Image 1 (spheres, rainbow, N blue to C red):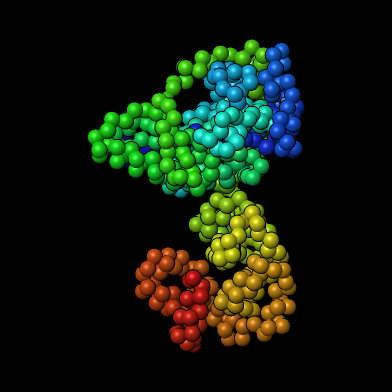
Image 2 (image 1 turned 30 degrees about the horizontal axis):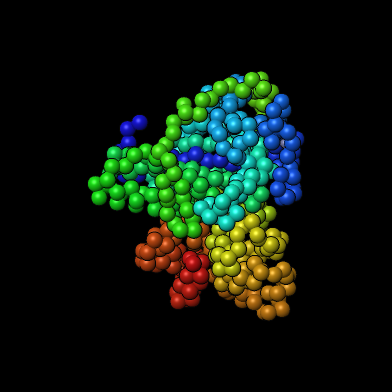
Length: 463
Ligand SMILES: [Zn+2]
């Protein structure tokens, strides 16, 4: 492949699926953490044991391959990847090589379409425990609880152009997994290896291993790009190699010069007969982010709001509970005010405890002009932390908008909704656009309103 960009990044993601049992035996994937307590002859690699394929894992892998728009193989074929290491008792890993489950897919992220080379299934090796740290241990312990857990490996084309874009891809990928319901953060592991190269070295690749969190991917890649550029500047000749990311120290270190796939001596696994995939062909996918955004837009939600909300699985689920109040207004409130209050309180959307029916009431009161947007913001700050009756709170604290103001509030809200172009102009720093909105409100009030008051009200809408 001929590259032209300054930076070329490709990802190889391993995601653990949330199946009840392991890929080739009936040991549970979750449960006791006592070392080697969830094992059997199959996942311990005992001679004579035979793998039996887990249907749930095939089903969930198919969902992922389909959601990524992959061409699906007609048969599921497993191979043995030979390597000798304590995390692999059989001395081979059961994976897919010659014929992956899915090929030639895609995932759209903000402004770019990233092609997916392949999606395949494989078993997870055991975990190695180094008491006293990687370099300080005189021995290593092996825990086979993880051995045989079902993984999907997803490989992208080298089309990502920056560490930031790699992070965006990972975020979009995780969102997709959540929509599909095949992965549980905190319980299941997701890891990425990244191939990265820069123009200055003539695109000599390094594979950075061991990136285990999404925040880390941006840091690890930024470091590695900088290291490669510096090496090129110093006139060093780089070789293709595998490097490990050290998150504590914030740098990568060389592990080995890159082996080729041929080195693993793949052979078809004679214990697993090819499985016809026709019975899985009609798998129905749940609603995906793009479908959901389309649905929101059809209900009157602004395109940008629909996009931002659907990109966050939990926020989108929450929004579904308040959309009825007034789709456009609710979307604006969820995306701006709720997210603002969440960020202020360091809350994730998955941790939201806010009562949707009370937020709905709040939105309706704003819609009807019973409270101003500014009062609404103050109530939101409280509502995100505790449960209470919004209507009663407004009444008890005498927070209702006076009659005249409520009409003006309505005009301001309408002016903002009807003039999104002016709003984005103002948001991007063109202060003059505010005059346009002010004019729109004046017109609605037939010139009776006080410009100074309108300006204040408008500013509250434009935060
Ligand atoms: Zn087992």
